[in-house]
Structure formats: structure tokens, C-alpha cells
Image 1 (cartoon, helix red, strand yellow):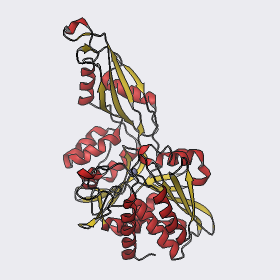
Image 2 (cartoon, protein in one colour):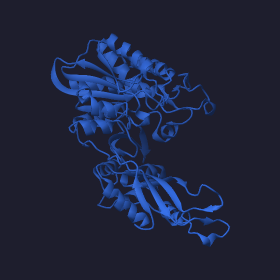
Image 3 (tube, helix red, strand yellow):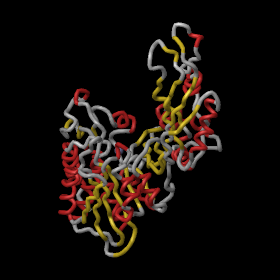
Image 4 (tube, protein in one colour):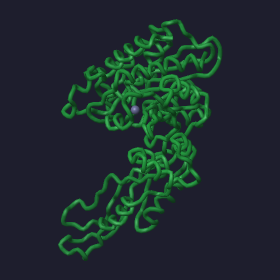
Length: 436
Ligand SMILES: [Zn+2]
């Protein structure tokens, strides 16, 4: 097993290097960083392949084959990032500076840190001569996650599935912890919600704005709709992941989620804010437009709403929940995106290994399965390979979720070096345990 100090040092240095490759998407420009990683992986003994949907934006699949057939374990990560405005930062976002015990820069949390931990752990194992007894260790390093994965994981899973076929995936989306009632709880992301964005249109009749009642104002018809969305969310739904999450936190659910949510809120309202979206359909109005001219009563107004739906539930379900909040007449509704969320089982060999790891590293802590309100590349793998178990997990102990979450996609993104060491230990221990 690689020596922990050395593993932490390697991961830290690698993350600093990765941050120095500007992979802001768009345009992504992932080729140089992929070439750099390919060299590291090949030198350690991996077989690497670069697979591009478009010129200059390769995905990478690296394999360490075992002595016989067996499960394929994939460490998944994306190498692109969102943009960064240097004016908002206290360091250069592409410096990879090391200060105050942290590595700073765009991607330090999302998710070059996990890519660095995965690659550092995998190359350290391979250099020591470790090979899977059976099965295969894969690294799948994707482009284009931050802009919808059209050229990344989605393309890989849909267009070249044989290149990325696997049984177990460890990806982003979990591993942060919260503290509740004096106990650390690490989240394991086992499911992602679906994305059902829609445009809601109200109609009226144009007229001169100096005589309000000469027309029929489509914009003011939005007022009760917005008011309803501000005041309430659709009813909560009991699904397996939040039930298991609440149980892990010590809150029993007796068929009704409302009281459980209230008990969580009374312990720590911040936890309730994060938990609530796991419990049902959410509606967040984000954009509105009406008249093109200030002196014309609008004949039409359009409101855009970002709606997220629990895993496996479809458009009909979303429509019913929307009607619950805003009724079903007086507007037209059209979905612009309908991506159904999916899930992996809560119980699995991979879950037990994660539990054991936390048991060894942080014995008083516990783990809890969770649904991510957002979206990750795991979804494409679950869809392409229905038996594949895909979880988000990259353990973080010294920075908690309430510190880390506001830094993601924001200024001064950074990660404690200690957490890089912890994550690398996780990836270095996991592969030999699952693959022998
Ligand atoms: Zn990410």
C-alpha cells in the first residue's frame, strides 16, 4: 500500500499542476491536460486511449487489467471547469497556489482534486506492481461535464459504450460531511434528480401603457403564479434515499416526511435547507420577460422555471406537482428539458467498502446515502449500464459541507491538503479491496 505521506504529497503536487491547465468550459480545451495525464498513467503501466467527440476535446480511458475476468471498477472524473473572474479572487485562479494549508484555484473542489486523488492513488498502486487479481481498474477522465457532457460522458456512454463499460463507478457528488448532534455524517451520493426546465406563458392583449385597462396585461397575470411558487413547494415524496439518509441521521420516518424535516430544522436549519430538495419536486423561477417596450402593455409574458424531479419520475409526475402549486389554468406550459433522474441501490459491496473506510479513518462518524439535487456524469453510466452501481464519494474531513459548498463555482475555491491525502488514501485502498 502506498505510504500515506507520500500519497498526500503526490496528490497535492498533481492538483497544483492540473489547476495550471486552464480548462474553463467553454471552450474546455482539455487536450493538453489529457496528454499530461496520459503520460503519467502510461509510465505507471496503464493502457490509455483518448476518445474525442470533437477535435481538441478528448476524453481519456485508462486501464489496468487484472489476471482474470472480474468486475470493472471505474474512477470517474471530469477535467473541465466553470469560468473564473480573476478580479473576484484573492489569488490567480490558475496558479495552484499553496497557502494556509490549502491548494487554491479553479477546480480545487470541482473536481480536479478528486481527479488528482484518483490518478495519484492509481499510479502509486501500479508503480508498486499491484495488478487486480480479477477484473480491471479503469480511470475515465471526461471532458465537457460543465456544459452538459455532450462531448464527454454522455457521448462516451451513448456512442462508444464498449470503451467505458463497467460495473462500479466512483464519481463526484458526495464525500463531504455535515455535523449533526455532535456526529460527523459523510454523504454518499447514490442518485441524481431529473432536470425538467420549463417556460410558462401567460397571454393578454396589447395596448397603450398610459391607459392601463385598455389592454389585458399578461405580466400582472404572473403575480399570483410567482406568489404561489414563493410560498410553497410541491408535496414531499418518500423515496428510498432520503428515508435512508434520515435514518442514518437518527430521525425515524413514519410515512410522513414533514415532521422529520421539522425535527432536522430544529437541530440545524442549514441541514434542512440541503435536505428539502431531496424530498420532492422543486420549482425555482429564474427568468421572466414581457413587453419589449416600456409603454406597451404586454400581450404575452414568459417565465422560466428550473424544476428538479426525484429519480425515475417523469414529465407527467412533474406536471401534477406543478399543478398542485399553481393550479392548472391561466397559463401555458412547455418543457425545454426533460432528463429523468436515476439511482443506484443503497445497499452494495461498494457502500460497505465506503462504510469500512470511514470506520477506519473516522471511527465516530457515520455515512448516509443521499440524492444530489444537481446533476453529474454518473447519470450517463447508470443509463447505459443498468447493473452498474455508480456513487459519488470523495471524502473530506477538515472542510465541512457548509464551508465547501459556497466555494464551488465561486471565487477563492480551495481544498485543504489534509483532505487531498484522505481522498487519495480512499482511492488507494478501495481498488485492492474490490479487485483483489
Ligand atoms: Zn463537477
